[in-house]
Length: 78
Image (cartoon, rainbow, N blue to C red; front, side):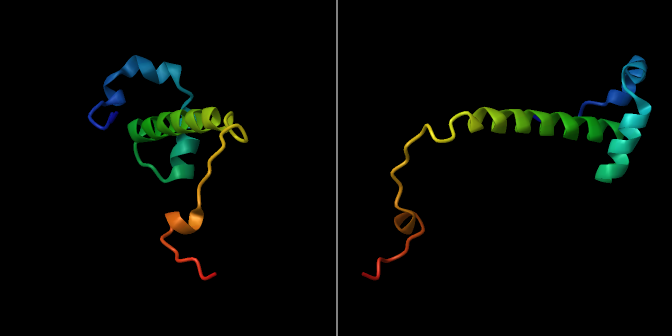
């Protein structure tokens, strides 16, 4: 989902809900120049991390019988 067309700046009352200092710090840390883009980037990152966290629950529980030489297209030398 892409929110590039959504303009948070159109919603003046939202400014009260966000810490200006936090947004300014995020903009400086990421070199992102607009509030809209920094908020979208932060939300996308939060969602990505949440999905990764969910996948980590499967660590050690899924048995994959994969021959990496075959996957990489390598020929067995022996």
